[in-house]
Length: 294
Image (tube, rainbow, N blue to C red; front, side):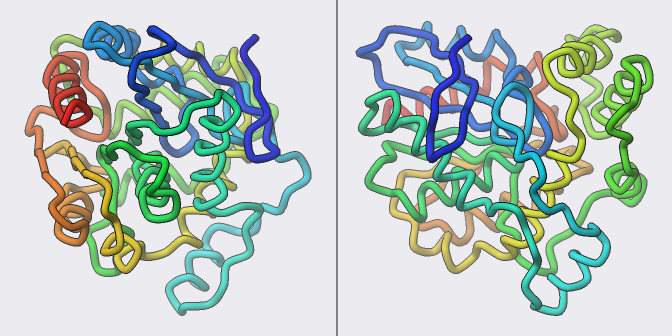
């Protein structure tokens, strides 16, 4: 299996396309495994002439679990963050950005185009802010600047995210919960089979069910706060994509990113929520590839 040590963390990754092609590094979001990147998207980007690398973030999937690391109460942590008090976290989003850069180091890649979805969008924002010399371009998808005052998730979805998931849930329970959660913030895409969410949740469970890792990732998001001042320092060519029907991270989050990153380009896809709907893969591939090709 393709594991590699990056930033002192053992990461699982997959590498597609010619070794000498320009690299696109894909970074997935909160609690989601690398399999959430549609294979059709990866293969289409390879067909466009790219080497496409994607990986499981730390604490999820088949990458290293941060066993024994702290995971304090979410409600209390959110309250502290709103008061401007420090939040106790096992690791930061900047650490997770360094993981991705460390993966490039370990693979001998000097520069890459980075593409992040949701929390992955936050991570690539920090790659652009903290490691700009390593980036050819940056694409942030369905993410946010973290600025206070931005609209939040729909209340029913917020409640779903606050539910504590048992570490010993059986496969049937975990798959049902995961499928219902993802369905709640996905676009009703006519190109997506009805069974798709359950099938993906089943694959994710079999690869690695580890809900406390998702909690630690969420704490890292809470602790990171607003990235507005850091966004203003970004010089990397930036594309921002968001679904117009996103009920989890409303489009205002990406509008704010595009407002603060100098010369950023914003694309709103109306037929997309907080997902990568099959019917929009072709459009997203054209946007990402065109941006990376300059």
